[in-house]
Length: 261
Image (cartoon, rainbow, N blue to C red; front, side, top):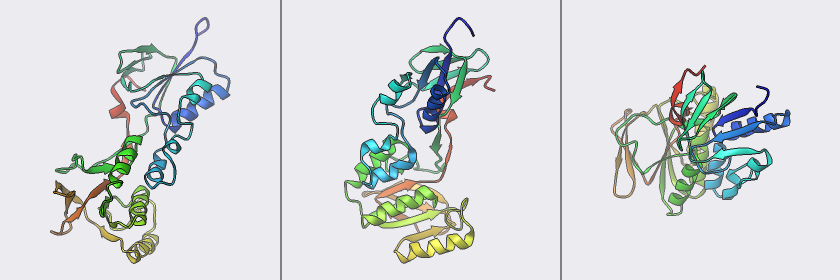
């Protein structure tokens, strides 16, 4: 590769991509760095979204590497915003962005993060169903909270789910937490530990529906009604937030992966 500048392509604009950029520059890499992202925001951290909605941090706090373009300028990165990768050929080492740009690269780092998993049930794509992962998700939920809803239904007793329960509880909302699993934090907590936390939540007035899988989401005049497979009793709420896990975002971020290995 002597005689020409090296090209490093990074796909994804999260913290992993940002740390990759820092590691490259701080280890002496002087070649080009090209970053493709499917959004228009600076580097954001999904774990900060609930803190923003709760008012614990301002909007700029969502961006731990700075809310403007200083990070990219400091580390000499060419950024292609709102241009997700539509094809990546690892054999020819060519990446193609949504804007039609094709780049020949020497190395490519795929750091596209994760996207929420939603159960494949009727009504799940309603505009009244919220997730909590992206900057857009945080903005949307904060706008909904400004309307002073009285009841929220959180589906998914994960760490994010509990943060959402706390957020709603702290503003005086009635809250129901549901999960397909038999106890909360099913992937992280021992059942005895989960039972202790469940008791604390119940004491605070949080309604728990565990062992309840979602069967259908239905829009109502004031919000949504959710049907479960554990009983005929449904739940109504003005806000429905899904926190049922995430999966790798490769499929949504890169349309065609040719000979990636």
